[in-house]
Length: 476
Ligand code: ADP
Ligand code: GLC
Image (cartoon, rainbow, N blue to C red; front, top):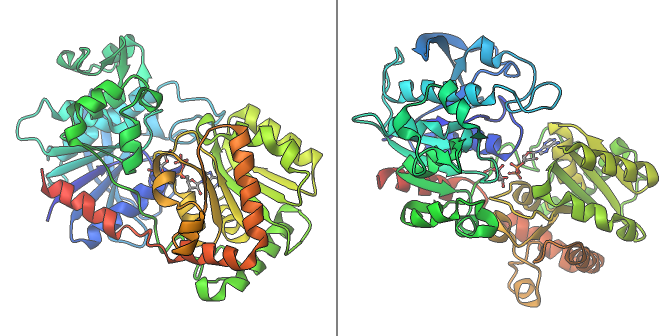
Protein backbone atom coordinates (compact mmCIF):
# COMPACT_ATOMS: atom_id res chain seq x y z
CA UNK A 1 0.00 0.00 0.00
CA UNK A 2 1.33 3.41 -0.98
CA UNK A 3 0.77 6.63 0.93
CA UNK A 4 -0.04 9.20 -1.73
CA UNK A 5 -0.48 12.93 -1.29
CA UNK A 6 -2.56 14.23 -4.22
CA UNK A 7 -1.90 17.94 -4.69
CA UNK A 8 -4.51 19.82 -6.71
CA UNK A 9 -5.97 23.31 -7.10
CA UNK A 10 -9.53 22.02 -7.64
CA UNK A 11 -11.58 18.90 -6.89
CA UNK A 12 -15.21 18.20 -7.73
CA UNK A 13 -17.64 18.63 -6.02
CA UNK A 14 -15.80 20.92 -3.59
CA UNK A 15 -14.63 23.39 -6.24
CA UNK A 16 -14.51 23.14 -10.03
CA UNK A 17 -13.61 25.27 -13.03
CA UNK A 18 -12.79 22.46 -15.49
CA UNK A 19 -11.72 18.89 -16.02
CA UNK A 20 -8.92 18.88 -13.44
CA UNK A 21 -11.64 19.02 -10.78
CA UNK A 22 -13.39 16.00 -12.28
CA UNK A 23 -10.13 14.05 -12.23
CA UNK A 24 -9.14 15.13 -8.71
CA UNK A 25 -12.62 14.23 -7.48
CA UNK A 26 -12.61 10.75 -8.96
CA UNK A 27 -9.08 9.35 -9.45
CA UNK A 28 -8.27 9.44 -5.69
CA UNK A 29 -11.48 7.50 -5.02
CA UNK A 30 -10.46 4.89 -7.60
CA UNK A 31 -7.00 4.60 -6.00
CA UNK A 32 -8.55 4.26 -2.55
CA UNK A 33 -10.62 1.41 -3.95
CA UNK A 34 -7.33 -0.20 -4.95
CA UNK A 35 -6.44 -0.07 -1.23
CA UNK A 36 -4.05 2.88 -1.43
CA UNK A 37 -3.80 5.41 1.39
CA UNK A 38 -4.47 8.57 -0.60
CA UNK A 39 -5.02 12.11 0.76
CA UNK A 40 -6.02 15.13 -1.28
CA UNK A 41 -4.65 18.58 -0.43
CA UNK A 42 -6.26 21.74 -1.78
CA UNK A 43 -6.55 25.43 -0.78
CA UNK A 44 -9.57 26.25 1.38
CA UNK A 45 -11.17 28.75 -1.02
CA UNK A 46 -14.10 30.81 0.15
CA UNK A 47 -16.25 29.02 -2.44
CA UNK A 48 -15.74 25.68 -0.66
CA UNK A 49 -18.72 25.48 1.63
CA UNK A 50 -18.36 22.02 3.11
CA UNK A 51 -19.93 21.95 6.58
CA UNK A 52 -18.02 19.12 8.15
CA UNK A 53 -14.39 20.31 7.95
CA UNK A 54 -12.59 20.16 11.26
CA UNK A 55 -9.33 21.67 12.48
CA UNK A 56 -6.25 19.42 12.42
CA UNK A 57 -3.20 21.59 12.97
CA UNK A 58 -1.33 24.83 12.30
CA UNK A 59 1.82 24.97 10.19
CA UNK A 60 4.20 27.91 9.94
CA UNK A 61 5.71 28.62 6.50
CA UNK A 62 7.43 31.75 5.28
CA UNK A 63 6.46 33.73 8.43
CA UNK A 64 2.84 32.83 8.14
CA UNK A 65 0.61 30.58 10.24
CA UNK A 66 -1.58 28.38 8.11
CA UNK A 67 -4.25 26.00 9.41
CA UNK A 68 -5.00 22.60 7.98
CA UNK A 69 -8.62 21.47 8.16
CA UNK A 70 -9.86 18.01 7.25
CA UNK A 71 -12.91 16.87 5.36
CA UNK A 72 -13.58 14.04 2.89
CA UNK A 73 -14.32 13.69 -0.77
CA UNK A 74 -18.10 13.34 -0.68
CA UNK A 75 -19.36 9.77 -0.93
CA UNK A 76 -15.97 8.32 -0.09
CA UNK A 77 -13.60 8.07 2.80
CA UNK A 78 -10.76 9.84 1.00
CA UNK A 79 -9.47 12.51 3.41
CA UNK A 80 -9.12 16.03 2.03
CA UNK A 81 -6.78 18.47 3.74
CA UNK A 82 -7.88 22.06 3.24
CA UNK A 83 -5.07 24.60 3.43
CA UNK A 84 -6.73 27.40 5.32
CA UNK A 85 -5.22 30.87 5.20
CA UNK A 86 -7.93 33.52 5.20
CA UNK A 87 -5.80 36.40 3.93
CA UNK A 88 -5.00 34.36 0.82
CA UNK A 89 -8.05 32.25 0.08
CA UNK A 90 -11.08 33.77 1.82
CA UNK A 91 -11.91 36.13 -1.00
CA UNK A 92 -14.78 35.84 -3.50
CA UNK A 93 -13.88 34.45 -6.92
CA UNK A 94 -12.68 31.13 -8.34
CA UNK A 95 -9.27 29.52 -7.80
CA UNK A 96 -7.66 31.62 -10.54
CA UNK A 97 -9.86 34.69 -11.05
CA UNK A 98 -11.19 37.35 -8.71
CA UNK A 99 -14.86 38.29 -8.60
CA UNK A 100 -14.37 40.62 -11.60
CA UNK A 101 -13.00 37.76 -13.68
CA UNK A 102 -9.43 39.10 -13.53
CA UNK A 103 -6.50 36.81 -12.63
CA UNK A 104 -5.67 37.13 -8.92
CA UNK A 105 -2.97 39.73 -8.51
CA UNK A 106 -1.34 37.58 -5.81
CA UNK A 107 -1.84 34.28 -7.64
CA UNK A 108 1.87 33.35 -7.41
CA UNK A 109 1.82 33.83 -3.66
CA UNK A 110 -1.48 31.97 -3.28
CA UNK A 111 -0.03 28.83 -4.87
CA UNK A 112 3.52 29.21 -3.51
CA UNK A 113 2.17 29.09 0.04
CA UNK A 114 -0.03 26.16 -0.93
CA UNK A 115 3.02 24.31 -2.33
CA UNK A 116 5.10 25.02 0.79
CA UNK A 117 2.38 23.55 2.98
CA UNK A 118 2.13 20.48 0.74
CA UNK A 119 5.89 19.99 1.19
CA UNK A 120 5.60 20.24 4.99
CA UNK A 121 2.79 17.69 4.98
CA UNK A 122 4.62 15.35 2.60
CA UNK A 123 7.75 15.47 4.76
CA UNK A 124 5.74 14.75 7.91
CA UNK A 125 6.72 18.00 9.57
CA UNK A 126 3.18 18.72 10.74
CA UNK A 127 1.00 17.30 13.49
CA UNK A 128 -0.90 15.28 10.91
CA UNK A 129 1.62 12.54 11.62
CA UNK A 130 1.61 11.05 8.12
CA UNK A 131 4.51 10.81 5.69
CA UNK A 132 3.91 10.42 1.97
CA UNK A 133 5.63 7.75 -0.14
CA UNK A 134 4.49 9.50 -3.30
CA UNK A 135 3.49 13.10 -3.92
CA UNK A 136 1.28 13.33 -6.98
CA UNK A 137 1.16 16.92 -8.28
CA UNK A 138 -1.17 18.34 -10.91
CA UNK A 139 -0.61 21.32 -13.20
CA UNK A 140 1.42 24.47 -12.59
CA UNK A 141 -0.28 25.41 -9.33
CA UNK A 142 1.56 22.50 -7.67
CA UNK A 143 4.77 22.81 -9.70
CA UNK A 144 6.89 24.18 -6.86
CA UNK A 145 6.32 21.02 -4.82
CA UNK A 146 8.73 18.71 -6.74
CA UNK A 147 11.22 21.59 -6.94
CA UNK A 148 11.20 22.26 -3.18
CA UNK A 149 11.18 18.54 -2.37
CA UNK A 150 14.29 18.05 -4.53
CA UNK A 151 16.21 19.93 -1.83
CA UNK A 152 15.11 17.56 0.93
CA UNK A 153 16.82 14.43 2.17
CA UNK A 154 14.73 11.26 2.42
CA UNK A 155 12.02 12.85 0.37
CA UNK A 156 9.01 11.06 -1.09
CA UNK A 157 8.99 10.29 -4.81
CA UNK A 158 7.18 12.77 -7.02
CA UNK A 159 4.81 12.45 -9.98
CA UNK A 160 3.76 15.50 -11.97
CA UNK A 161 0.66 15.24 -14.17
CA UNK A 162 0.23 17.76 -16.97
CA UNK A 163 -3.47 18.46 -17.51
CA UNK A 164 -2.78 21.43 -19.71
CA UNK A 165 0.65 22.66 -20.82
CA UNK A 166 -0.83 25.95 -22.05
CA UNK A 167 -1.08 27.19 -18.46
CA UNK A 168 2.40 27.48 -16.97
CA UNK A 169 2.40 29.91 -14.07
CA UNK A 170 4.91 32.40 -15.51
CA UNK A 171 5.92 35.41 -13.41
CA UNK A 172 8.56 38.14 -13.54
CA UNK A 173 11.88 37.47 -11.75
CA UNK A 174 10.95 39.92 -8.98
CA UNK A 175 8.22 37.49 -7.93
CA UNK A 176 10.89 34.84 -7.39
CA UNK A 177 12.57 37.00 -4.79
CA UNK A 178 9.31 38.19 -3.27
CA UNK A 179 8.37 34.54 -2.70
CA UNK A 180 11.69 33.85 -0.92
CA UNK A 181 12.33 30.80 -3.06
CA UNK A 182 15.72 29.09 -2.59
CA UNK A 183 18.46 30.61 -4.74
CA UNK A 184 19.75 27.28 -6.00
CA UNK A 185 16.52 26.66 -7.94
CA UNK A 186 16.92 29.87 -9.96
CA UNK A 187 18.77 28.82 -13.12
CA UNK A 188 17.82 27.90 -16.70
CA UNK A 189 17.79 24.23 -15.86
CA UNK A 190 15.65 24.94 -12.81
CA UNK A 191 12.68 27.23 -12.32
CA UNK A 192 13.90 29.88 -14.72
CA UNK A 193 12.30 29.99 -18.19
CA UNK A 194 13.49 32.76 -20.51
CA UNK A 195 14.27 34.87 -17.44
CA UNK A 196 10.84 34.32 -15.99
CA UNK A 197 9.81 32.23 -13.00
CA UNK A 198 7.98 29.15 -14.33
CA UNK A 199 5.97 27.14 -11.81
CA UNK A 200 5.33 24.34 -14.30
CA UNK A 201 9.06 23.84 -14.87
CA UNK A 202 9.29 22.88 -11.22
CA UNK A 203 7.15 19.86 -12.06
CA UNK A 204 8.75 19.11 -15.42
CA UNK A 205 12.34 19.40 -14.23
CA UNK A 206 12.35 18.01 -10.71
CA UNK A 207 9.70 15.29 -10.59
CA UNK A 208 10.64 11.62 -10.77
CA UNK A 209 7.87 10.83 -13.25
CA UNK A 210 5.84 13.02 -15.60
CA UNK A 211 2.49 11.93 -16.89
CA UNK A 212 -0.09 13.58 -19.04
CA UNK A 213 -3.74 12.76 -19.47
CA UNK A 214 -3.65 10.92 -22.81
CA UNK A 215 -1.05 8.96 -24.79
CA UNK A 216 -1.48 11.19 -27.86
CA UNK A 217 -0.95 14.41 -25.87
CA UNK A 218 2.22 12.84 -24.39
CA UNK A 219 3.63 12.73 -27.93
CA UNK A 220 2.19 16.07 -29.04
CA UNK A 221 3.83 18.06 -26.22
CA UNK A 222 7.23 16.92 -27.44
CA UNK A 223 6.69 18.95 -30.63
CA UNK A 224 6.95 22.75 -31.11
CA UNK A 225 3.27 23.01 -32.10
CA UNK A 226 2.06 21.88 -28.67
CA UNK A 227 5.16 22.35 -26.50
CA UNK A 228 5.26 26.15 -25.98
CA UNK A 229 9.05 26.05 -25.90
CA UNK A 230 9.07 23.23 -23.35
CA UNK A 231 9.17 20.49 -26.03
CA UNK A 232 12.98 20.16 -25.71
CA UNK A 233 12.80 19.60 -21.96
CA UNK A 234 9.94 17.14 -22.39
CA UNK A 235 11.73 15.16 -25.13
CA UNK A 236 14.82 15.11 -22.97
CA UNK A 237 12.72 13.52 -20.20
CA UNK A 238 10.74 11.20 -22.48
CA UNK A 239 11.96 8.11 -20.62
CA UNK A 240 9.99 9.16 -17.55
CA UNK A 241 7.09 10.72 -19.47
CA UNK A 242 3.94 8.74 -20.21
CA UNK A 243 0.29 9.29 -21.09
CA UNK A 244 -2.48 7.77 -18.99
CA UNK A 245 -5.97 8.44 -20.29
CA UNK A 246 -8.42 9.95 -17.79
CA UNK A 247 -11.35 7.91 -16.59
CA UNK A 248 -14.74 9.34 -15.71
CA UNK A 249 -16.82 9.15 -12.56
CA UNK A 250 -19.25 6.41 -13.58
CA UNK A 251 -21.68 7.29 -10.77
CA UNK A 252 -21.80 11.04 -11.41
CA UNK A 253 -22.19 10.51 -15.15
CA UNK A 254 -24.65 7.65 -15.39
CA UNK A 255 -27.65 8.35 -17.65
CA UNK A 256 -29.69 5.69 -15.86
CA UNK A 257 -29.44 7.25 -12.39
CA UNK A 258 -28.48 10.91 -13.07
CA UNK A 259 -30.60 12.99 -10.65
CA UNK A 260 -30.28 16.00 -12.97
CA UNK A 261 -32.42 14.35 -15.65
CA UNK A 262 -36.20 14.24 -15.87
CA UNK A 263 -35.87 10.74 -17.35
CA UNK A 264 -33.16 8.13 -16.84
CA UNK A 265 -32.25 5.77 -19.68
CA UNK A 266 -29.64 3.31 -20.83
CA UNK A 267 -28.69 1.51 -24.04
CA UNK A 268 -31.75 -0.73 -23.80
CA UNK A 269 -34.16 2.19 -23.37
CA UNK A 270 -32.65 4.78 -25.72
CA UNK A 271 -36.10 5.95 -26.82
CA UNK A 272 -36.44 7.59 -23.40
CA UNK A 273 -33.56 9.95 -24.24
CA UNK A 274 -36.19 11.90 -26.18
CA UNK A 275 -37.94 12.96 -22.96
CA UNK A 276 -34.72 14.73 -21.97
CA UNK A 277 -34.47 16.35 -25.40
CA UNK A 278 -37.98 17.74 -25.06
CA UNK A 279 -37.33 19.04 -21.55
CA UNK A 280 -34.05 20.62 -22.66
CA UNK A 281 -35.68 22.37 -25.62
CA UNK A 282 -38.36 23.73 -23.28
CA UNK A 283 -35.86 24.85 -20.66
CA UNK A 284 -33.64 26.77 -23.06
CA UNK A 285 -36.58 28.23 -24.99
CA UNK A 286 -36.19 26.47 -28.36
CA UNK A 287 -39.12 24.99 -30.28
CA UNK A 288 -39.88 21.46 -29.12
CA UNK A 289 -39.12 19.18 -32.05
CA UNK A 290 -38.26 15.51 -31.71
CA UNK A 291 -36.94 15.11 -35.24
CA UNK A 292 -34.58 18.08 -35.54
CA UNK A 293 -30.93 17.26 -34.80
CA UNK A 294 -29.76 19.22 -31.75
CA UNK A 295 -26.07 20.08 -31.47
CA UNK A 296 -24.64 21.10 -28.13
CA UNK A 297 -21.53 22.38 -26.42
CA UNK A 298 -20.51 22.76 -22.77
CA UNK A 299 -17.15 24.40 -22.45
CA UNK A 300 -14.78 26.99 -21.16
CA UNK A 301 -14.95 29.60 -23.92
CA UNK A 302 -11.26 29.91 -24.78
CA UNK A 303 -9.03 29.65 -27.84
CA UNK A 304 -8.15 26.02 -27.01
CA UNK A 305 -11.73 24.96 -27.67
CA UNK A 306 -11.97 26.41 -31.25
CA UNK A 307 -15.16 28.33 -30.46
CA UNK A 308 -14.04 30.82 -33.12
CA UNK A 309 -14.27 28.09 -35.79
CA UNK A 310 -17.82 27.38 -34.76
CA UNK A 311 -18.64 31.09 -34.86
CA UNK A 312 -17.22 31.23 -38.38
CA UNK A 313 -19.57 28.55 -39.69
CA UNK A 314 -22.75 29.45 -37.80
CA UNK A 315 -24.15 31.76 -40.53
CA UNK A 316 -23.89 28.88 -43.00
CA UNK A 317 -24.97 25.92 -40.88
CA UNK A 318 -27.92 27.78 -39.45
CA UNK A 319 -29.59 27.54 -42.85
CA UNK A 320 -29.82 23.77 -42.24
CA UNK A 321 -32.57 22.24 -40.13
CA UNK A 322 -30.67 22.11 -36.80
CA UNK A 323 -30.70 23.60 -33.32
CA UNK A 324 -27.62 24.52 -31.29
CA UNK A 325 -27.52 24.70 -27.48
CA UNK A 326 -24.44 26.16 -25.82
CA UNK A 327 -23.36 26.57 -22.20
CA UNK A 328 -20.07 28.13 -21.18
CA UNK A 329 -18.10 31.08 -19.97
CA UNK A 330 -14.68 32.58 -20.53
CA UNK A 331 -13.41 35.05 -23.12
CA UNK A 332 -15.79 38.02 -23.12
CA UNK A 333 -15.54 38.55 -26.90
CA UNK A 334 -16.57 34.96 -27.54
CA UNK A 335 -19.39 35.29 -25.00
CA UNK A 336 -20.62 38.43 -26.79
CA UNK A 337 -20.48 36.89 -30.27
CA UNK A 338 -22.36 33.78 -29.18
CA UNK A 339 -25.01 35.90 -27.45
CA UNK A 340 -25.42 37.90 -30.65
CA UNK A 341 -26.15 34.73 -32.60
CA UNK A 342 -28.70 33.66 -29.98
CA UNK A 343 -30.46 37.01 -30.44
CA UNK A 344 -30.31 36.75 -34.24
CA UNK A 345 -31.65 33.19 -34.38
CA UNK A 346 -33.82 32.74 -31.28
CA UNK A 347 -35.57 29.69 -32.76
CA UNK A 348 -32.34 27.90 -33.58
CA UNK A 349 -29.62 28.89 -31.13
CA UNK A 350 -29.68 29.03 -27.34
CA UNK A 351 -26.70 30.37 -25.40
CA UNK A 352 -26.33 30.26 -21.62
CA UNK A 353 -23.33 32.13 -20.30
CA UNK A 354 -22.22 30.94 -16.88
CA UNK A 355 -21.41 27.78 -15.01
CA UNK A 356 -24.30 25.38 -14.46
CA UNK A 357 -23.65 21.79 -13.44
CA UNK A 358 -27.28 20.67 -13.68
CA UNK A 359 -27.78 22.13 -17.15
CA UNK A 360 -24.48 20.55 -18.28
CA UNK A 361 -25.91 17.11 -17.43
CA UNK A 362 -29.26 17.82 -19.12
CA UNK A 363 -27.44 19.03 -22.25
CA UNK A 364 -25.40 15.81 -22.42
CA UNK A 365 -28.61 13.78 -22.17
CA UNK A 366 -30.89 15.96 -24.29
CA UNK A 367 -28.80 16.76 -27.37
CA UNK A 368 -28.01 14.47 -30.28
CA UNK A 369 -24.49 15.68 -31.10
CA UNK A 370 -21.76 17.17 -28.87
CA UNK A 371 -19.30 19.59 -30.49
CA UNK A 372 -15.67 19.45 -29.38
CA UNK A 373 -13.55 20.86 -32.22
CA UNK A 374 -10.61 21.73 -29.90
CA UNK A 375 -7.27 22.92 -31.31
CA UNK A 376 -5.63 20.85 -28.61
CA UNK A 377 -7.18 18.73 -25.89
CA UNK A 378 -4.93 17.04 -23.33
CA UNK A 379 -7.74 14.58 -22.59
CA UNK A 380 -11.22 16.11 -22.60
CA UNK A 381 -14.04 14.65 -20.59
CA UNK A 382 -17.21 15.73 -22.35
CA UNK A 383 -16.58 13.50 -25.36
CA UNK A 384 -16.58 10.56 -22.93
CA UNK A 385 -19.65 11.79 -21.03
CA UNK A 386 -21.35 12.17 -24.43
CA UNK A 387 -20.62 8.61 -25.49
CA UNK A 388 -21.94 7.30 -22.17
CA UNK A 389 -25.12 9.35 -22.74
CA UNK A 390 -25.76 8.08 -26.29
CA UNK A 391 -24.78 11.48 -27.68
CA UNK A 392 -22.50 11.46 -30.71
CA UNK A 393 -19.35 13.56 -30.34
CA UNK A 394 -17.81 15.52 -33.22
CA UNK A 395 -14.15 15.97 -32.30
CA UNK A 396 -10.90 17.09 -33.84
CA UNK A 397 -8.17 14.48 -34.09
CA UNK A 398 -5.98 15.67 -31.22
CA UNK A 399 -4.91 14.59 -27.71
CA UNK A 400 -7.42 12.60 -25.73
CA UNK A 401 -10.12 13.21 -28.33
CA UNK A 402 -8.12 11.12 -30.80
CA UNK A 403 -7.66 8.43 -28.14
CA UNK A 404 -11.31 8.09 -27.08
CA UNK A 405 -13.50 8.60 -30.16
CA UNK A 406 -13.56 6.23 -33.14
CA UNK A 407 -14.51 7.90 -36.42
CA UNK A 408 -17.53 6.55 -38.28
CA UNK A 409 -16.02 5.03 -41.42
CA UNK A 410 -17.27 2.02 -43.41
CA UNK A 411 -14.83 -0.33 -41.61
CA UNK A 412 -15.50 0.97 -38.10
CA UNK A 413 -19.24 0.92 -38.70
CA UNK A 414 -18.94 -2.64 -39.93
CA UNK A 415 -17.07 -3.82 -36.84
CA UNK A 416 -19.23 -1.77 -34.42
CA UNK A 417 -16.37 0.34 -33.07
CA UNK A 418 -17.45 3.68 -34.58
CA UNK A 419 -18.66 6.05 -31.85
CA UNK A 420 -18.40 9.57 -33.28
CA UNK A 421 -17.12 11.85 -36.02
CA UNK A 422 -13.44 12.78 -36.13
CA UNK A 423 -11.97 15.49 -38.37
CA UNK A 424 -8.37 16.57 -38.89
CA UNK A 425 -7.73 20.23 -39.59
CA UNK A 426 -8.39 23.06 -37.15
CA UNK A 427 -10.20 24.93 -39.90
CA UNK A 428 -13.77 26.11 -40.26
CA UNK A 429 -14.19 24.19 -43.54
CA UNK A 430 -13.19 20.88 -41.95
CA UNK A 431 -15.55 21.40 -39.04
CA UNK A 432 -18.35 22.20 -41.47
CA UNK A 433 -17.64 19.04 -43.47
CA UNK A 434 -17.76 17.02 -40.25
CA UNK A 435 -21.15 18.52 -39.39
CA UNK A 436 -22.50 17.67 -42.82
CA UNK A 437 -21.19 14.12 -42.52
CA UNK A 438 -22.90 13.90 -39.17
CA UNK A 439 -26.24 15.09 -40.57
CA UNK A 440 -26.16 12.38 -43.23
CA UNK A 441 -25.58 9.75 -40.54
CA UNK A 442 -28.35 11.24 -38.38
CA UNK A 443 -30.91 10.65 -41.13
CA UNK A 444 -30.08 6.93 -41.17
CA UNK A 445 -31.75 5.92 -37.89
CA UNK A 446 -30.34 2.42 -37.85
CA UNK A 447 -26.74 3.52 -38.24
CA UNK A 448 -27.26 6.33 -35.72
CA UNK A 449 -28.49 3.99 -33.05
CA UNK A 450 -25.57 1.66 -33.80
CA UNK A 451 -23.18 4.57 -33.14
CA UNK A 452 -25.00 5.45 -29.92
CA UNK A 453 -24.89 1.91 -28.62
CA UNK A 454 -21.21 1.46 -29.47
CA UNK A 455 -20.38 4.59 -27.44
CA UNK A 456 -22.57 3.55 -24.51
CA UNK A 457 -20.91 0.15 -24.34
CA UNK A 458 -17.38 1.54 -23.98
CA UNK A 459 -15.64 1.33 -20.63
CA UNK A 460 -14.54 4.84 -19.62
CA UNK A 461 -14.27 3.97 -15.93
CA UNK A 462 -11.11 4.63 -13.92
CA UNK A 463 -10.48 0.90 -13.52
CA UNK A 464 -7.68 0.60 -16.08
CA UNK A 465 -6.17 4.04 -15.65
CA UNK A 466 -6.09 3.95 -11.85
CA UNK A 467 -4.24 0.65 -12.16
CA UNK A 468 -1.75 2.32 -14.50
CA UNK A 469 -1.10 5.07 -11.93
CA UNK A 470 -0.64 2.41 -9.28
CA UNK A 471 1.87 0.54 -11.47
CA UNK A 472 3.68 3.84 -11.96
CA UNK A 473 3.81 4.49 -8.19
CA UNK A 474 5.08 0.99 -7.61
CA UNK A 475 7.77 1.31 -10.26
CA UNK A 476 9.42 4.20 -8.44
P1 ADP B 1 -11.22 21.54 -19.60
O1 ADP B 1 -10.70 20.95 -18.36
O2 ADP B 1 -10.18 21.92 -20.58
O3 ADP B 1 -12.16 22.66 -19.34
P2 ADP B 1 -12.63 18.99 -19.92
O4 ADP B 1 -13.43 18.46 -21.05
O5 ADP B 1 -11.57 18.12 -19.40
O6 ADP B 1 -12.07 20.41 -20.37
O7 ADP B 1 -13.56 19.24 -18.67
C1 ADP B 1 -14.48 20.28 -18.57
C2 ADP B 1 -15.43 19.97 -17.43
O8 ADP B 1 -16.04 21.17 -17.02
C3 ADP B 1 -16.55 19.05 -17.84
O9 ADP B 1 -16.99 18.31 -16.71
C4 ADP B 1 -17.63 20.03 -18.29
O10 ADP B 1 -18.91 19.48 -18.24
C5 ADP B 1 -17.44 21.11 -17.27
N1 ADP B 1 -17.88 22.45 -17.71
C6 ADP B 1 -17.23 23.29 -18.54
N2 ADP B 1 -17.91 24.45 -18.67
C7 ADP B 1 -19.02 24.31 -17.91
C8 ADP B 1 -20.14 25.16 -17.63
N3 ADP B 1 -20.23 26.37 -18.16
N4 ADP B 1 -21.10 24.71 -16.79
C9 ADP B 1 -21.00 23.47 -16.25
N5 ADP B 1 -19.99 22.62 -16.48
C10 ADP B 1 -19.00 23.04 -17.29
C1 GLC C 1 -7.35 20.10 -18.71
C2 GLC C 1 -7.51 19.81 -20.18
C3 GLC C 1 -8.53 18.75 -20.48
C4 GLC C 1 -8.44 17.59 -19.51
C5 GLC C 1 -8.53 18.10 -18.09
C6 GLC C 1 -8.45 16.98 -17.06
O1 GLC C 1 -8.09 21.15 -18.24
O2 GLC C 1 -7.78 20.98 -20.92
O3 GLC C 1 -8.33 18.28 -21.80
O4 GLC C 1 -9.48 16.68 -19.75
O5 GLC C 1 -7.48 18.98 -17.84
O6 GLC C 1 -7.28 16.22 -17.17
